[in-house]
Image 1: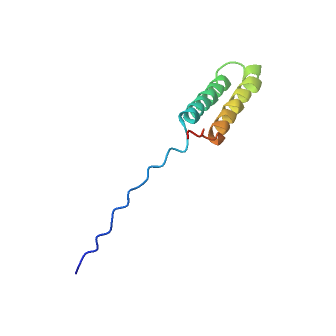
Image 2: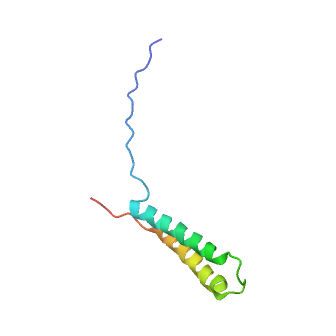
Image 3: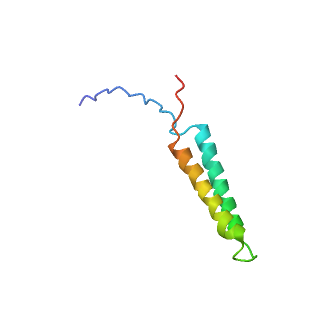
Length: 78
């Protein structure tokens, strides 16, 4: 039997979904969330205002930064 010689298709390399700025914002958001949880933890008074007010706000800001980093559109470099 004769074997068919099919041409090898070259795969076009697609660009990344996110740019460097998106990844930097994602890393920043992870750091901010971890900082908020570190402030929330500890051995001091459980009803301290930094634990029940400041730390949750910092965590929510971290999540917001991550949300913005995911939804940020890449700049057109054409």
